[in-house]
Length: 213
Image 1 (cartoon, rainbow, N blue to C red):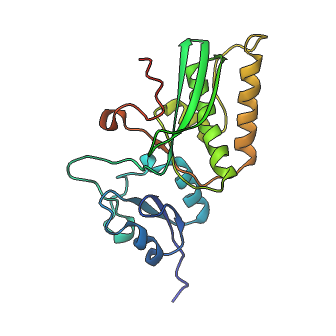
Image 2: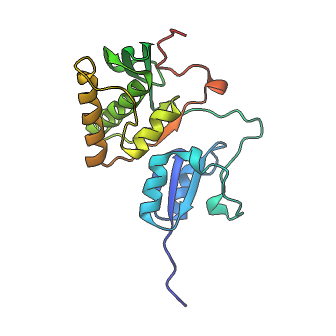
Image 3: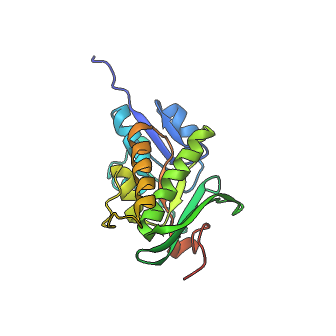
């Protein structure tokens, strides 16, 4: 018989999140968790990329019935967010306009960092906020998830590039330097933190919301 291939298990939501190299280890963190989100992958690189992408890209995709690849879907559709996480948000008066962003500890709402105001756009602020949160968590060696309600910013982070149309001139030079610094950080740093979409329709406004709507 040929050598059995190793599978890697990504746990996005469970008693403990991360990448595990065996089902025996993985199941300790997902079994009994009604809304656990996890999936197996055939290589470590695939698992790392999936962990970074977040569960939304994979949730409910698999049609296999293998126990190691099942993802629990709550019957009442009441998803719950992970309290041990960081929520980020940005606010901007105008487009472009005076922009600021912040990150808060999801469980208590405590502000962990705040930047601005500075001339920019809301999407740029959302992007910078996620990267700031990644850097913040890496500094303290934490693998907690990060929540954002901006699909655009999450896409930019995955691409490691802010695809903004903001004109670069003397007025926007300051924010452009921040963008370049954030892009460089993404290109030169690894991280294990899942970046997850905040489900506003279910959970209400994100915990870092500025309350200006």
